[in-house]
Image (cartoon, rainbow, N blue to C red; front, side):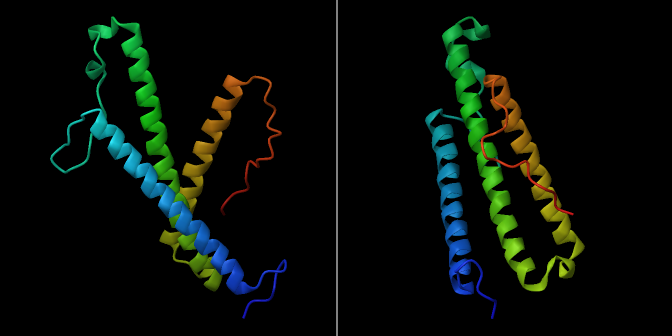
Length: 158
């Protein structure tokens, strides 16, 4: 049995991790449903393998970008859709990382297969890129931001 840490018993810590994974999985499912709903609402076409493709600019009218409002609506649609897709991918990575970390916590990272370690490194790299892009966008929209928002730039997975 694991020793008590921070007033929490082992079972309580396991419950907290399970709850986070469950709620994260539910959020990912909801985000995926939003993407499908958005695509269906925009009357996109499905390709032969069943996935739904993004709406093209012509669906918004004002051919050749002649109508500025249609271009603005399309730009907003594309940005929101891409943000949802990116969020879904990050949630998938987080869920996979939580699963790998739970297994690694029992046997130690040294006991993990090299391909599992590579998966974790890939998850870390994708998450770091997303974080860095977010910080860059935040700093562009708020030049007075100095990074003192309590977030961490995060360590590394070696």
